Image 1 (cartoon, helix red, strand yellow):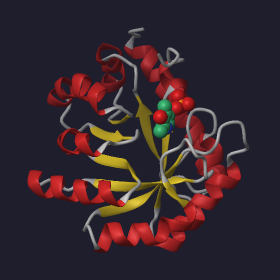
Image 2 (spheres, protein in one colour):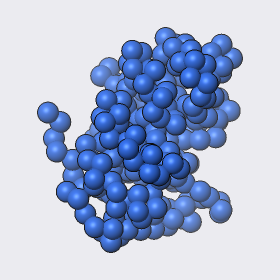
Image 3 (cartoon, protein in one colour):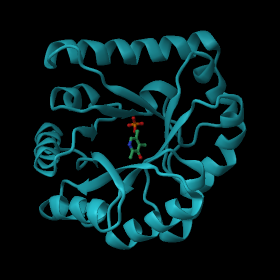
Image 4 (cartoon, helix red, strand yellow):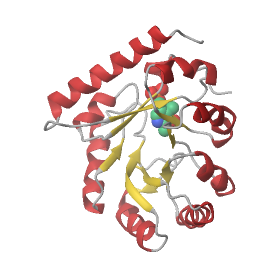
Amino acid sequence: MVGSLEEAQTALDYIRSRMEKACRRFGAPPREVDLIAVSKTVPGKALEPFLAAGQRVFGENRVQEAKEKWPALCARFPDIELHLIGPLQTNKAREAVALFDVIETLDRDKLAGILAAEMARAEKRLACFVQVNIGGEAQKAGIAAAETVAFVERCRNLHGLDVVGLMCIPPEGKAPGPYFAHLAMLAREAGLDRLSMGMSGDFETAIAMGATHVRVGSALFGKRPPLA
Ligand SMILES: *Cc1c(COP(=O)(O)O)cnc(C)c1O
């Protein structure tokens, strides 16, 4: 699984060039979109060529896995920016605050309160994205679309969190465009200008709809093993 620097560079160049094309085609220039390299299930050794190739922003979806993998790499590359993109249990909030730079999965009041307390305790303020359950799916995390604007206001005013944007994962098997457009509309209503949306299969569509952050895993690192 460990590739060469050249392979990592080629994979990064390919994704970045597709992002740039989408930006040119769909955005008023200059438009910047951040590439979050989603490194879940990728061993630390296999990430080194990507770090050597200059990638610094990574997404992980489990606190435990990130804790095993990233502290050693962060010690060597202090400018790494780690995003938590998976569901966060309140009992992992302290570890998440210690390890991550950005929380993308803020989706309920209890979590907002605990994150605020843990950030105060650690004297570390993390930027947060509110995750929206944009497809209204029973099994998916995220605040309901209709509650998003009020929730963002509570996170800011009641809990004092730095909410910077919205994040979503649209339903599988459906055209994602309308869901991305809906998220963009909610962000405008909430007065937020960052949108984390789009994965390997649909990041160009997400850029067309206003994404400022795309989260790309398998298109960079190869297919992941199926979930155990
Ligand atoms: C795994 C994951 C991704 C990346 O998915 P790919 O299809 O491999 O690009 C993006 N966002 C979240 C929240 C994920 O869990």
